[in-house]
Amino acid sequence: MSAVQELLKRRPTTLRVLSASGQLGYGIPHQAFAAGLARKPDFIGCDMGSVDPGPAYLGSGDMATSPAVTRGDLAAVLLAARSLNIPLIIGTAGTSGAAPHLDATLAMIRSIAAEHKLHFRLASIRADLKAERVIQALDTNTLIPLGGDLSVTAEDLKASTHIVGQMGCAPFEQALALDPDVIIAGRACDTAVFASIPKMLGFDMANVMHMSKIIECTSICCEPGGRDAMLATLNADGFELESMNPDRRATPLSVAAHSLYEQADPVSFTEPDGTLKVDTATYRALDDRRTYVSGATWQDATHTTIKVEASMLLGHRAVLLAGTADPKVIQRLPELIATVESTTRALVPGDYQIYPRLYGIDGVYPQQERNVSGSIRESFILIEVIAQTPELALAAAKTFKQFLLHQGFSGRQCTGGNLAFPFTPPELAAGKAYRFSAYHVMPAADHRELFPVTIETL
Amino acid sequence: MTKLQDLATVIRSKNAGPLTLSLDLMFPSEESYQMALRSSALTAEAIGRLYNTATEKISITSYDAARAIKIAMPRKIVSGSPGDRDVYGAQQHVPLLGLEL
Image 1 (cartoon, each protein chain N blue to C red):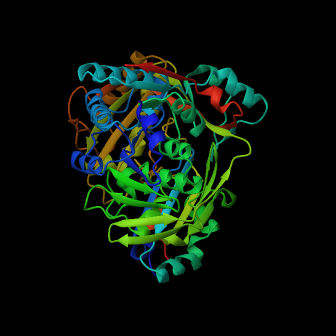
Image 2 (cartoon, rainbow over the protein chains, first blue to last red):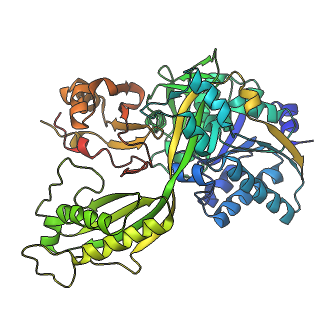
């Protein structure tokens, strides 16, 4: 009997949900995870990705995490779920949840299964969208940027290396209907990873979604926050939250505060399946490290919408890294950078962009005028070049380096050189440069069909 | 006058998706929270001036259960696009620190 069938047969009225990781692949703190397993959870959920690390991973198909650490984390959750015969659900496989990320994650799962002679039913859900499907939405003016200004064209969508949709619960419900032990999904809402099983079992959706929203980040909702496994115990009226690290306290204030995290609106969350509102929720301390939550509201969506994410190649990046501590160089740095940029453009022809960031001056905050205050002791200079070929990007960075090193100015005493290089070469090829080409929402009446499910027996 | 950094327990920034910057302020007591809610330094107009962003693009919401104020606005450069200086948006809270309430 599969783990999902087993759970359906038991139909627990109190459901223990173990969130093992908010971003699988950086290492799962062992003690807290083991403590969570000792509490006999009904299923294990893990989020494995995010849009936070920027466009490079969705664009390239690479994972943000190391393959060895990722495989170790996958082995930890897979072996645990199989030994307890409970379902394991992983969402946003391999950082971004596009085909190469999902395939690499599935390959690891199969290899771990072979190594440990595990036999189980593995469901996988793809999240890749065809450019034409998204262009349909664009053409009917129903592709809306999510929260800011990002215009997208049909050409951008066609040129994007990967386009994914963020699935809600419906595709997971299709996968659960195939009696799997393990579900690995491409790009998915963090909530859907944790909500699909309690939804299947008929728990109240307001509590289910509110719980999922909080535990997908494991112990970040605690005081002090951290990455340790988090246990939620769901019943008919609400849910209880407890970190599996005894030093992390889930307090009414820390849990309530979590609803602000990485959200534009702290009280209302729109998901593909509906809208969660937490303004009516209550948070009650059970003791100094457990909180009971209830009272949120849920409204089923009348029209399903999904988030669309796409990334496209811009070119190739090279970077120059250097420091300076000479007060006269620092004082004139903005001007020296501008002069050397002109020299570089004159000597290295071609189409490229140069983005200087002068740490100590305006590395983090761009300024209208680059005012250099007298108190700066050192400055770090990061010169980024993006060109159509890696050779051109590196050529511009090399010339920039040499001319900035020796650029003269009146009153200069440091005629040996303006820069301190931390190592050589100080100019490095930094791989391909990508940008988000879409971060939009579109109507998806075809929510189920967009995310195909396959099942295999290992 | 009280500086925000002397009143709030949390002053943080983070992306809410690659197009949106969100700023969270959390307060240690009901009194400090109410003081911040009433402050003319925390209106959409004032925040707009501080972040060089049009008033109508700034949203400010409060969540009493967390004694927290949320400010959201569009990022000037999409996360990770050329010229970006803060991919996660985690260091965009600094202009708020010295704000006089």
